[in-house]
Image (tube, rainbow, N blue to C red; front, side):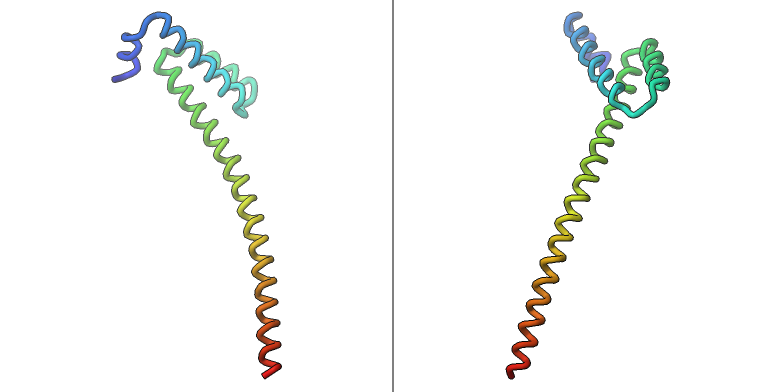
Length: 111
């Protein structure tokens, strides 16, 4: 079922509630995106003249961009944390290797 068919089944109040929620979401996504103010204003001008499907497409575009940016932040954080874990592991492994080598040398000297 496409968006227009679903809209026909909704009451006027439900449609207005959906439009309000969609507008708030799009406003948030547009406000938090890293575009300059001139570009944001141009997009608002396009949105003013857009139909329901076009607004959904614009909203989806910004939502996907927002999620990609959030994933980038998470990926950077995860990479940093994994590098710390690897560094700690490498240090401990080096200590174990040194202790093991020392113990083996002591054993071979005592034989």
